[in-house]
Length: 311
Image 1 (cartoon, rainbow, N blue to C red):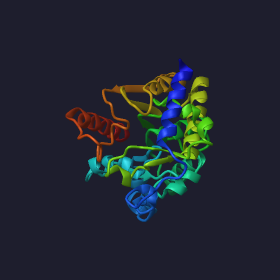
Image 2: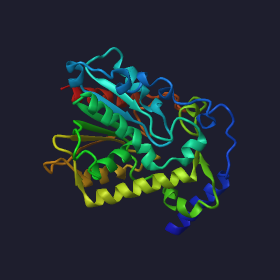
Image 3: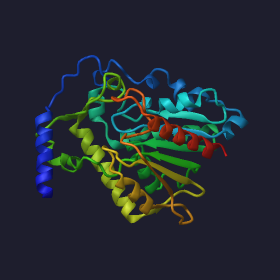
């Protein structure tokens, strides 16, 4: 039965993909809509906006927000909008490497390339004196954070205070990702049904090369979670997970809960969210108008993040 399911998935891929997409000029893939953080970093990266912080600014909480696979800084714009005129914490929105530019740049980037800007911003902020830094990741942004934690990246560096994960991508809901290596020679890319608004901020086309990278990093993280690891000293982890997510299997939250413990061996926190949305905190430009429940879910998550980092 499993082989039949995988074969069916493979046939769907083969009938919906080609080796070279027609990029047009209306989407992120085309290169006409590059992420604004590339030309205006001061509006997105705290290290660019405030490179000479005062002592009180150094001590103020910072949230580094990390978007997911095929996305851009847009994925966390609504947190910035929600913050409004608040000045009790900072937001720094990181653009993953290879993202936010064009199809061919995306195609050529490895998952290590995706991860690099996260490390760069974190290390810059620490070197500038900021000492109260937390992370908020969505989808594959969480996968990269989990890899950094499991690999001991923070062992000899400033320890993050809090980590928030929204719909972490550890196990895909679409099991065909596991056979992308077999299909590689036959397909060049897959397509995503983005809205006209989304296609300026999310890639319409996902090259097989990038899907292989996503498969590799998620597989690596699954193994690390099976082995188990602990958070840095005095660091907390909270996972928010949509219970009907069609991109990241809800079981991802269970694997993280079982595989990650605090430094003292205590369990991390997981909250299952009643939602069909992947990255339920992003509501703008969706195909369907957000429901009252969608907005309540977003508000609750943003409010909790702000409360935790500022308490």
